[in-house]
Image (cartoon, rainbow, N blue to C red):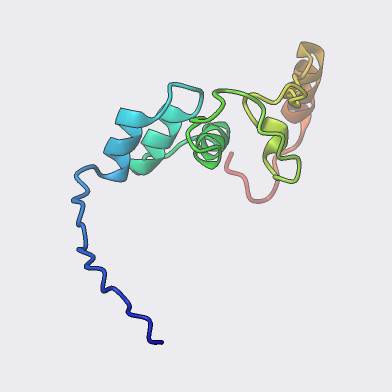
Length: 118
């Protein structure tokens, strides 16, 4: 008994992509921390390290499209400590004004080195 196989005609559907990744991000990206930084990166602008971290987290989390601005809980990530929505985020250390004054005084009393211009 021979089994007849039906030939299924499949037409390729071509979809024209009309948006560049930058346009797509501007149009569909959620408004959370890191969006403007990621747009700046895509434009080739120079950013600070903290702004680059925001951009990375925004991109890595899929533009926060699923759950919004929440902790990603990706504790294996090297940048997790600075993740914008990390509840246990490591805060930057501030230097006491007395310490700054002491350092300035020490530098002012220091003799110029051989390589410095007087």
